[in-house]
Length: 356
Image 1 (tube, rainbow, N blue to C red):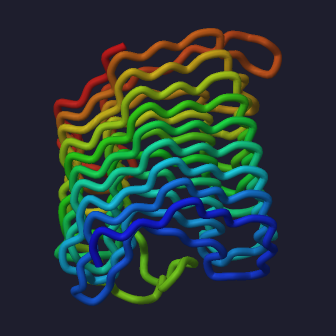
Image 2: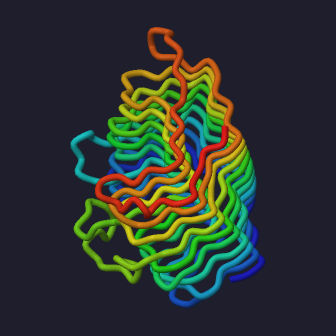
């Protein structure tokens, strides 16, 4: 599939109960060694929909959604708005579900994705309640694949305002490049110009994660889609190289979580992956209220949990101002160049830094 254009799409005022995923939209989709290149989805609105008890994802939008493909390239989404959507689930539902999953180039099972673009994305006045995660926003995502590559994918121009996130685990996870049980390469991906304003975030673990490169394991038997299947990337090493999150502003928001804001140049969590030469830069954290947190704002150059490697990653050019507790007491950020925790070898983190 090549050179296809879909424009002026509105998905509005639907109600969906207990779907696997309720709403999906892609610029290009391919499977089983097929290819999709130079396709576009322009002017998409998803407004005032109700999604009850999604088992996997409430709303999923990606520039490319391949399944065991050949080469996909240069697919793009331009001007997308999500407004007034309500996504809910019972808090005792045993699923690692997500409200919004929004990505640029994406690979699943196998294949290659290059040079995708997701531009001008707005989320306003949405509510996600009771799910495990509120939103995953990733420029280049590789998941349960091998061999595979996702490179040079870009998300540029994101605005979130007045959304409510009340979730069981993580409120917002934002990364330039991510790898989940991948035996492949995630490289050169960019997430730029992201603005959060007036957000209300309540999470039982982490409020906001901002990362240049993020790698994590997906254990067999997990409570997520196809959790008991051993995919090609399972327990095999991946490379995350030169993934950058830049131009981020988090302002005027309320965050209620044990770990409120965690900024990570590179993060490798219980996996064999190697993340390097990636980071977060040009970050502003201003006038936020942080409630009930033992770790309000932490800036980490590189962190490894249990196993993996983070090398030469950084958080750079940070402005923090007028962040307070619920009583009005000032809150300052903690700066940690690198950390190896939960049994990770000390030499698993090398050359990482935080440069305010």
